Amino acid sequence: MFATVIVILPSAYTGGQVVVSHATTTKTIDFAANSLLSTALLAWYTDVKHEVKHVTSGYRFALSYNLIHVAPAGNPLPCLPTMDDSIVLLRRVLEKWREDKYEQSPEPSLIAYLLGHEYSTANLSDGFKTLKGADAHRVTFLRSVAEELGFVVGLASLEHNVSGPGDDDGGGYHRRGRYNRYGYSSDEDEDEDEEEPGMLEVDHTTTTISGLVSLDGVSLLPVGKITLGEDNLIPRNPFEDETPDDTEYEGYMGNVSLLDTLGVVIY
Image (tube, rainbow, N blue to C red; front, side, top):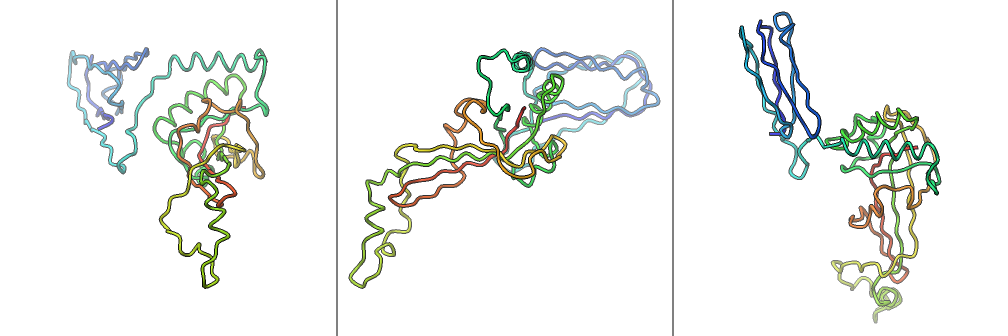
């Protein structure tokens, strides 16, 4: 169970206010005034505190439902993240950026934030509707603050490429050049299950975004890519503990790691 849904059917009553609170926000919901002629719907996540006041007259008829999480194992439960402090800090940062008060501003003038879920590039055309769970909540708050201050919020496919020499002591190079007594390369005799070596050191790193669209799914970058630097990424070193989506080992020549994901872009 991750949420509760209450359907209040037409029925005359007074009292019965519902008080919900989350983090530093508290709201009182009262449908009594129109209760005889209207149907109301209430819903809240399980991490939202709620209190139902007593009905002081009449009767209230309501249907109560528990929403159950039936997605495949590993998918996080939908939740309502605490955003109040983050919104205040975000507004402060964006205002300072807009007024050019930072000693150094990112070039190009955009910031990319990596989302929690993995999305395919085909989902980009759906814009905001493709986002799930906490990603959707964060972008909802981000959009309201950013657009109010004149920034554009979009979604894009982000590719992070890291390359460097493989930690194989030159073994890959020697295997390539060795032949057996029948004249065939000994590569065929190697153990196919042998693991690829790790990367000895990083020689080159590139980060790019492509397929940039607005939150309404309108294309903002129909062709080409935009290259990003470290100053364009939030948080810092976002790939430090990530596992590459794909790796390519080229023997003694080196090792290449790729990471694709979907990110929010602000500019």
